[in-house]
Length: 314
Image (cartoon, rainbow, N blue to C red; front, side, top):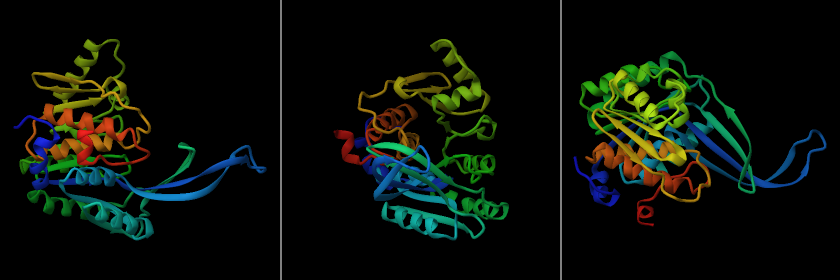
């Protein structure tokens, strides 16, 4: 393993191959001004003047890894519909190779956000779980992709696309591939055996319960890491930074002081940066330091966004 910053790994990252698997969605943004309240109900009337569409969920993880220079393949399920085709086009334009399993009975997940004066007024979600047959086909495709990658990122948004995640972890491990998981839900047992798990503070608390001090927090984290047979557990703690728990060590990285504009998608940036760095040969503490720097950059941007290589020197 090699220690250093992002620039020390830039050439290695360009040669690295990252496979991202998980729930993808199309993030739609409608921007406009509010000048009156509706006469029909006590709600604001938004006059939409601009729209935007961005890859979301695991698709945002993939484009974040690609923006750092990695060679990225994204495996997921989409519908035979306009949002699915838009996602494919956007990903290709962001340097990602999408490998989509298309299910005609499954509408591509869409999250629509209405924004006025930099504030989100409303979010509307369109989503349905994918069917069993398409998920089995996706599993077979996953197995065929594993030999040609350096690291696997499993981005779980709880939408049903990672039903077979335990098998995916086992398969990647049997091929000697590091597996990074961004978890969801109260049951972390399905992530057993992963190389690294990256829950945020709320997700971690949901699984282990509350703690009253730093010592208790550390004890719970080390116990969970051991229980799940993880090489590392990284808890992202918002304004408290990130804490990485390894078998015989704990590494805390304070939050970089930057203006926080929007935290949506910050977890995607963290795990994407970790994946790119680990694929390039970085150890977990080094990868965590760079991921923390990337998170500090991306929270200064609106919506799901990416970090560009030159911003690490900003």
